[in-house]
Length: 250
Image 1 (cartoon, rainbow, N blue to C red):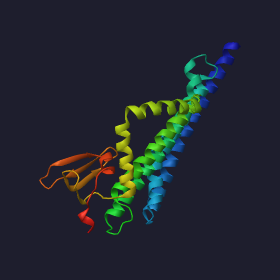
Image 2 (image 1 turned 45 degrees about the vertical axis):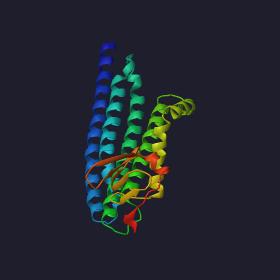
Image 3 (image 1 turned 90 degrees about the horizontal axis):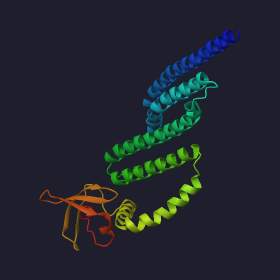
């Protein structure tokens, strides 16, 4: 009698887990259908924000449905199993959800950045240059990545306050060790904010032997192509100490 009861329980558990997986499969196809329909509707509008939302949410939504469905099915199949792996399923699900939200946010920022760059490239009176848009995009994606890491640590039971306190102490030590790198980073921020030049501008400096066309503005250095086709790699911190002429804005 006990063996028969165990068989019935095992059989019902298997059916329940199968139904959860089947429900996840159906939900995945349903989400794909509605996302394709939303994408077609978004293409008819001139607003780029709805396109970015739909495109950025495609993979995270599909993956999220499968991850949630499989982890719930595994928890049902595991039941009262003493195996330790079943005890980590909820943590895996929480980490996956945080990662998918961060992936959605970063994809959304990347698509908006690309759209703004294309829009501003076609306009001569654009309020933002390409370097500023790219810089803001990198800054936002970095903020999303750091926030995602902190949320993952919190979901795993790690004290975020302790991590931040340790990061503050470690940041001081790193600041002393990498002061030149930080100086270049903040120099890049000042270039993006003050905008003394943009990509494609002809610039020169009477203080240093620098003259040419700006090709790239990064967080650490700026690349200027001289008129004899030689690339000049200049640390961004140098621009806070020298005079820069921009004949392109005459």
